[in-house]
Amino acid sequence: MFKDKTILISGGTGSWGHEITRQLLTKEVKEIIIFSRGENAQVEMQRKLNCKLDRYVIGDVRDPDAVNKVMSRGIDYVFHAAALKHVPICENYPDEAIKTNIAGIRNVIDAAIKYKVKKFVNISTDKAAGPSNLYGLTKAIAERLTIQANCLTMDTEFINIRTGNVLGSNGSIIPYVIDQIKTVNKVRITDRQMMRFFLTVQQAVELLFHATKNGIGGETYIRKIPAFYIIDLIELLVEFYGDSNTKIEVIGIREGEKINEELITQSEISRTDDINKDYYVIYPEIKTGRSYNCSWYDVGGSMLIDKAVISEDNLQSKEQLSKLLKQGGWLK
Image 1 (cartoon, helix red, strand yellow):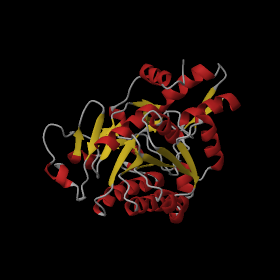
Image 2 (cartoon, one colour):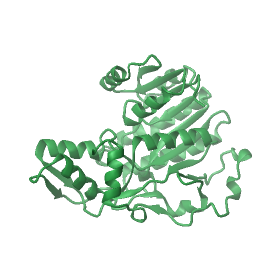
Image 3 (cartoon, one colour):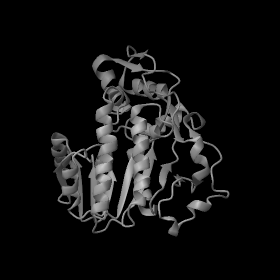
Image 4 (tube, one colour):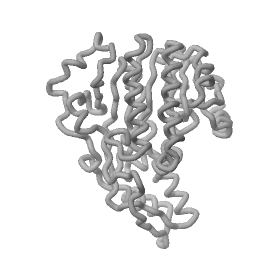
């Protein structure tokens, strides 16, 4: 699929970009273009990978001229990872979140259509399902913009993936907790009942590649992943990195946060297939012009799920979380 192809990763210097690039380097690609606005992050990534197949381009998805310039290089696949992701930041700076998460993806979509990119995959989040905060709302709109883009062209296939929390990604809870333990020997948690879906970055990229290979435009692919109590994660990290004096402080739920997260909402179950042991796929509720190759408008049968996918129904034990953390290299 990727042999002799050129791939663009927007926001490509984050954890997603590192893992996507690492895996693509084993697939005989022609070129990987890392498009982001972080100069230092690009330099560090370039030094770390030390590879002739990756090219680094400074630019911002907010800038349509920069997006069009990089897209004119002859891109086969676009993986859109650029976004403002922190819930409190998006709540406090809504205009900035809208500029990046909505206007930014619109710029990349328009350029992908203009230059006839083969496939565009938008990396979304469970917070887009039944959103309760501005970040989730912007990502929900980004999902819909991606689906509707299929109505505008027959040259590019636009697909979403929706994930949970990627363990150890930049700015995520694991690096934060470890840093808090090492610097102040105290960790804050908003609520002991809070639960989240977790997966490793390797599993996340497997989902991305599965969607790229199988999607024809309009679908949202979701990996089946477990959920865990946040307090279990913190306690495991405290046991490993802390000591008997490490404190856990409950500070209360922040604005826009939910106790539970959803991967698939009640309104989506009538369009969601349980396709195999690893993945769900949500078919679009709007006509995209891609029905020539599928049965979206005759969805039915035993493969449809019968209830929403929410974190409290997928809760796993602390022991299972420990295994996942060891798999990701955070515990030994």
